[in-house]
Amino acid sequence: MWGIMPNYAKQLFTSVALPRVLYMVDIWCTPTYSKHSSPKTVGLMKAIKQITSIQRAGVLAIMDGLCISATDALNTSAFLLPTSLLIQK
Image (tube, rainbow, N blue to C red; front, top):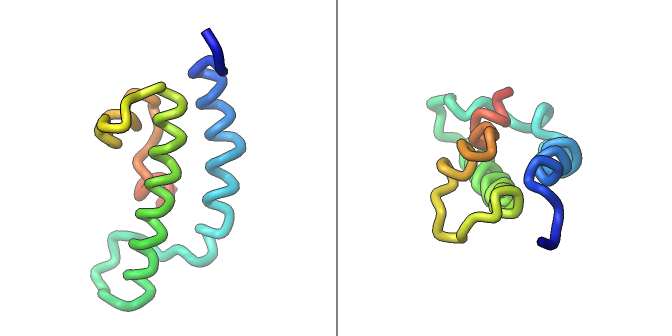
């Protein structure tokens, strides 16, 4: 077998990659449950989609999953929060 073990990959992803991606989220990110449809909300949804794609790539590497696997199932298998909940946390 080659590569890093899944538990070490998850620890590396949650301790290095996610903090770098979510660096400024506390400052510029408004809650996703707001009902206002402003340009800021539209930009936020685009940012959430981009962060979701980054998290999906990381979870695929952790779980060694297939690219056709559902993102929610991969997050559940890796014991990671979905992106929208991760941002609200």
